[in-house]
Image 1: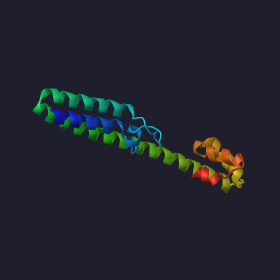
Image 2: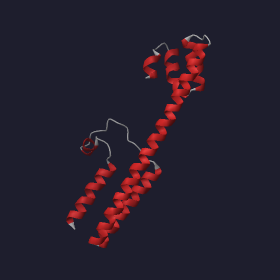
Image 3: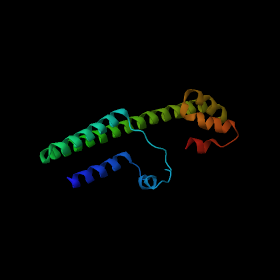
Length: 146
């Protein structure tokens, strides 16, 4: 029973400290990266996984086996949901970048000066707004575009 409690405690620490700065934060040092929030379905499924494990511990050896299977299923669902969310976000960002590139290309094709084309395209494409603001302030737009 002590082994099961130790495994559950280790799993809980791993679950709530997902990034590489976990040991530094446990030692009291601030994290370099901002904390990530889990999407709502991921948090709900994670809580469900904890409930399954707790129920398995209370039910005995057969319950532990069932709870471990449930935890594997929960982890798999979590991984799939996170990957789907990342893919959707990347696809949306890619589409926005393509739209911005097409807007810039069209404005340059009709003879606009690059700085004016950037300012005009930034009105339609939010991904260009930082670069346009940087250029308007007298800085270089290329690092902001990267």
